Image 1 (cartoon, rainbow, N blue to C red):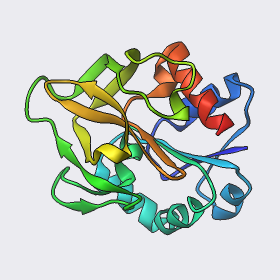
Image 2 (image 1 turned 90 degrees about the vertical axis):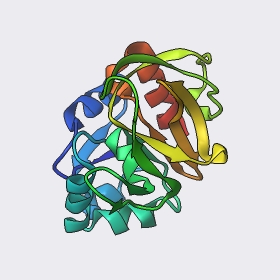
Image 3 (image 1 turned 135 degrees about the vertical axis):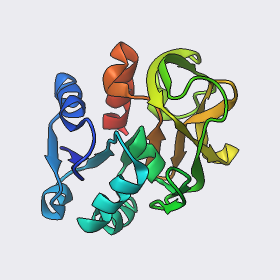
Length: 195
């Protein structure tokens, strides 16, 4: 069972449908007791960093996720990936979950948001098993993760090279939307389900 963390924002149902298409079971919940029964957790996200973190904290899900990653794989998607970081510069300075060192910073060049298909290079993680470097995924974001090289498992070029996939221990994050990325996105979710 995969638990999809519901904090009132994000494309929850589309992630659930993708997992179910792959033959998995997915539960959307904000209840710790329900999520306790899940072997994997997904933290999706669309919208504002500050509002999303406020919702996570109000539900007590911020502390819950920090506890769970000690023994449970967690995948953050798009804004959910940015929550994994220490901070974001979106609409001022806001603290994240602090699971991976780094911060979300705004692109300073190009059309913003960075939207559409783009390639992911230097894919070095079981999350990308069966995929070649340069595989295309679907992006929609104005901020990117500024993280150390050792926590970067995939990079993308958009006026600069940025970390489009990150990991540390049981914590994984992807800036793109696997649930909107066709066969490659499904393969990534399948790999996460097999971790």
